[in-house]
Length: 520
Image (tube, rainbow, N blue to C red; front, side, top):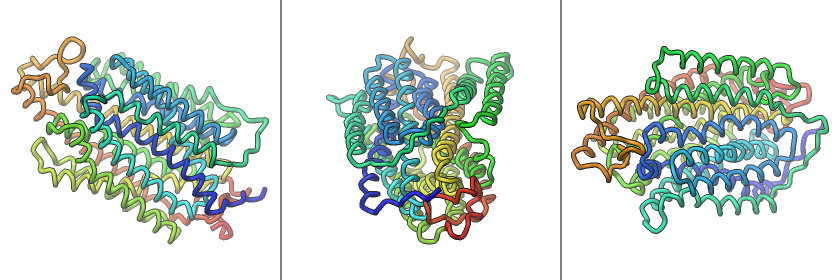
């Protein structure tokens, strides 16, 4: 088997233009909406639990579908799969924009998550198919730049849309549609990948279903335990036990089928296993903590959506600068472990800084901690994927990328669910204490505590103080979880990036430090 031909620089940039546009539309779908969520949920009289589930629903379906998209990319036409993902994304966006209540929005966001999972996973798969790992570090800087642009511009755009009366929050979902259509057209014209059809290709739908069901049941338990039922209850036993049975069955299936969705031989190897562990921790810390920053600024500090978007700039600036610089340095030296150790450590320090804030913390202090978090994220997220891709042959890069993206998204989904539940319980307890057990009614039966404008001034002041103080606790939890990422990065063997697209045929899955000299 000969190594795939490396595309020319011009060809790579032409294809990369479409791929970066796809990544941008996937990223902006979350960042535009996240800053507007307090206003959206407040206007629909939703609850804090529903607020969390609007985010969790997307992460859940994205997480469950990611390994499937990754595996499909190893078996079928990658370009066609990307276009299918764009179509699903556009449909979900339109459904969310036309939602009439929180329930409809949660369902639409769940469908949209299927498309987001395809776009985020397949973009990295295609890039791995056209750019060697050693050069990919430099191109990861472009990915980081697009991510930073989406994460900086998204909140600003979302805040502006919500604050402009003749637009309204529904356009937070509609705004991504034309961008997605443009991405579809650009990919059609620029992306040309050789495809060899495998007649014996099979997708492990049973394993995928068991994984999705097991993860979903566990997340549903996380969202409702301690609120709707006790930690020690028959509901807990049924959900946790059922989840373990489903995931155990998934492992049994994955170990026997010829084309597993999550290949155990890949995730059990040292480098992929440790990179995945670090990704789970980083995903929990980053997604779980950052998703509530917009709520902190709006509900806890009283800023408008546009102002809240501006206040998130320090974190996004950190992502942009650190991802670009670290990507170029990694391509230059061919080593990745020192940057992963530094990135995970910086991330923990940043979240610890956010964990010290309350409703009256000076904004420069909050902004400084956010900048540190952004630097840590920029040095870790894409480089952990690169570490895994470097350790597997090209034929497995789709499954490997899908696996690490799956576990990172799983960490983020669990993080959002757990931290959202912690925040909801803390806020409920503090509001009950403040109002003597008679906190303002929320949901369809009354005014939501998140709808600050509809609350009496005295009540509004208490709600803002409670949210501002309670948010710090979830950032401390994020910092504690992030320590696992630091330990995983330290345990990695030294990684030297290879300069070829593929490993030699006999090196199925091996640690990067054992890649043959000719492949480095």
